[in-house]
Image (cartoon, rainbow, N blue to C red):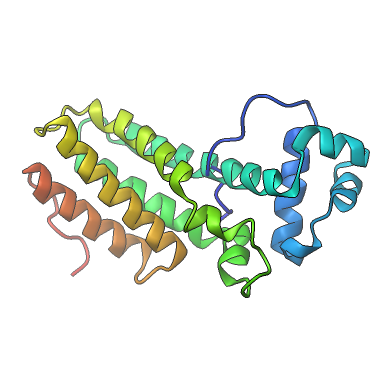
Length: 208
């Protein structure tokens, strides 16, 4: 994955150096690991003072959250693009969105660095994608729910929420530990969505 340039989009607040600092942190983590990320090193890479790094980011824990948020933004952008490509076919939009997310995750060097890190080497990063992923899941589900609502699915609001929760959590699980190709995983989830929504998936399953 390019890590999640989309985990909780980077907040608009912050000065002009915030994004370059976060980008430098992502690059350094992917290349050398989370322990190599220091405020002094980030200041050097971003071409700013160490005080500027502290002013823009704060603590290293806050930096971890900003990095995940930045990457989440990237992932949510491909989700939005997928729905835009299929304005009249919700099942196809779901297939396209899931596949795009998983393909992006596959090529994301930062995500791979987080997932493959040995125990204790990235204590601020890994929980944000696993045990402490509540904020990430909430934002992803909110974005997907907003897009799905435009299709007026034949279910009640609570029922739609259940479907979205299932899909988002399953996708995150496959992002962290894929069990099949992005295409096959997307195919299966789109088929499940079609059955729950009571519509015909066309084709029913692309990969059998």
